[in-house]
Length: 207
Image (cartoon, rainbow, N blue to C red; front, top):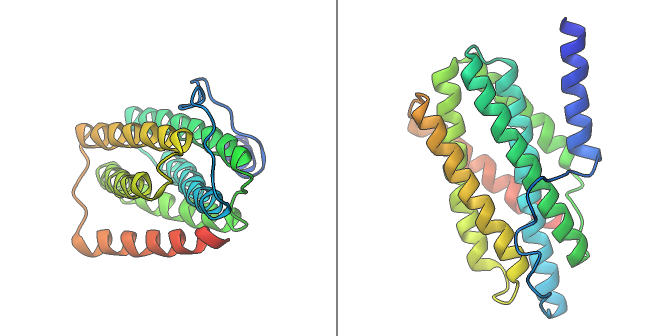
């Protein structure tokens, strides 16, 4: 029933935004000793991990929106599997933010709603285009995580381990999308996605 589906999706949104995420996998880097930081290094690491948390919130919303409008059951199952892994990423980052004394973005509900709308729109274009959007999103996230591996304090092995494993998962998601028939997005769409990502990144660093 439509009402049941709405309640399920609404529950997913509430859990993503307001409930602590959980992970079946061990948190990467949890066995590493905690590093010593200057106040600036700790604040910078926390801000970078907050940006990564926003990215995972958006990923949840994107996958949810795409799954809602997906036509192929196999594609829908792929989206749901990827969403589960993104939930684990949320759990890892939330744990690390607590260790760093940081916080999540104050604008998470805004990021979530915007990404949900984009996911629904991408899904309505058809599964090949939706998968193309997924693949391009993951490629941009991979580049973004590469940058964070360079930006994080060199001694912050716990954060680095989390980001490195997230990067591997995002690469796998992109490869799966391509294997299922993703189409290459036109250059203007890719440029618009990069611009939106830059706006989110710069804002989430502070808010």
